[in-house]
Image (tube, rainbow, N blue to C red; front, side):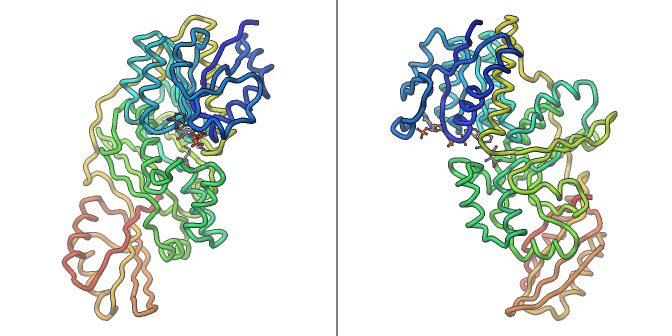
Length: 424
Ligand SMILES: NC(=O)C1=CN([C@@H]2O[C@H](COP(=O)(O)OP(=O)(O)OC[C@H]3O[C@@H](n4cnc5c(N)ncnc54)[C@H](OP(=O)(O)O)[C@@H]3O)[C@@H](O)[C@H]2O)C=CC1
Ligand SMILES: N[C@@H](CC=O)C(=O)O
């Protein structure tokens, strides 16, 4: 049987998982594709850390050793970040090597440019693992929603923050301890800033929106809020109201436009997304014909993510056998029209603090009446010289929220600490 030679860039959490899967499952892969897979060379930064690598695999710190190797037909990029990953992928594609990557930062930022380069060189560029780790969501949207009109894609698409929120609420861990553990387990990015600030989830929503709606966004086109400023008080108070707080990405068609956001939201405890814990992710895709569908699985971690990388490697291999490489991974294209804030209506959780509560409830009621909004739940507490009022509103538009914030800002003794959407 012929062998397809692979050059891998990176041998960290995901790279090690890919190596393990290729070695453990070679019979099945050969049966399915008609080819043996062999990882011939691996690019790393610190070769001294990888002395235990076996199986005749050559370690290198020089990308040219992979690019100039005529036997290598597939380059698997698992180093992460934009540079030098972008340049390495460009070199590989220009050398007519097919590319598989798990790099959402890169695909969300330069996906169209790299896809065009791949196409121009008759090569595949596939990136199933870039969204929701082990959940096969991109191919599912491509293949199984090819005719249905998708109206919304939303979900929990970052494993690190979901792990942190779960440990904080279920084990009472501090934010710092939960983050350290997520790093140890290999869920977090090399620099976890993108995880906790919502940027990693935003990259994934850019890619999901492209697959679901054919639109090309950047993460600067929509609001991105992470969990790094979420307070333990708000998490507890949401629980008392019957909600859990999750970092949720939403991409939703409203009239002719699309509303996109990544932010902490309150999810009712009986909503399917409320039950997604630890590093698990879930993506809910709503189609006009099919209605709601839910895809659930591990969103981070070596082997789950490696499974998605392997699904791309086997797809590329089948294309090599059939000589059909060079098609776009996704070629749906529509113009992006952002939904206006007037059109986007959700109930809100508003967390408000003040030194003294006297007369403030009346003030808040007046503001809500002025902006034509109303409360559905409200609670007040006082501790350590700080009074807090927490409100859940009925649905209000983004413009009403904006007006509420403006009026609160003009009140010297009232602070709006948090305003989170509430899922229905
Ligand atoms: N971890 C996860 O759960 C998931 C990760 N991803 C994505 O997969 C990719 C890889 O992630 P992960 O495995 O966690 O990352 P790691 O940080 O664990 O591993 C990165 C690897 O890349 C190597 N590397 C980094 N920079 C260079 C460079 N300039 N030249 C050569 N080698 C380099 C490192 O080498 P060395 O070991 O020698 O230092 C290391 O082996 C990222 O794009 C990430 O976003 C996607 C889904 C889930
Ligand atoms: N850091 C990411 C890894 C997978 O994409 C996450 O936590 O989800």
